[in-house]
Image 1 (spheres, rainbow, N blue to C red):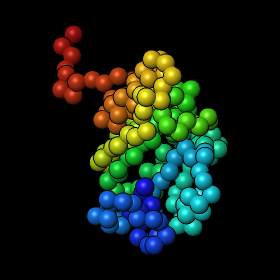
Image 2 (spheres, rainbow, N blue to C red):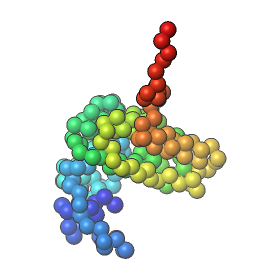
Image 3 (cartoon, rainbow, N blue to C red):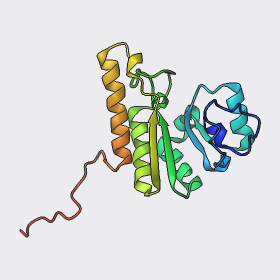
Length: 174
């Protein structure tokens, strides 16, 4: 839980067993949440109270994902650690997850987020979580979830939908 890493919450968050080695090292100002839609009241209170920048799905719909990413990158001007929960994507695309909630990001919005972060050159670490093939009802559920996760990771590492080219490739003279 990222809240265990915030020094602004001493004593407010229960200590996780076997995680006493973790020391608060983040600032709430260094966090951005994108695609929120089913946030419990206590978590929402913490996010608001600490002034964490967040974009609910309603805000993503209102602004568009390109504007959300522009504002996100304006807010984050240092190396970025992306923690991407696959359940941020709508469960019609990624059903093999433990906490599917309707109304999430589209496949294209997820790719836009990861491509945008890759193109900043600031992306220094990525974790993609909540992929759970055991929660898929069919092979198609599992395939859709896993292939979406792979596509998101590939975009983090520079794959672009318009195609990639060799850096030093030269066309022969006509």
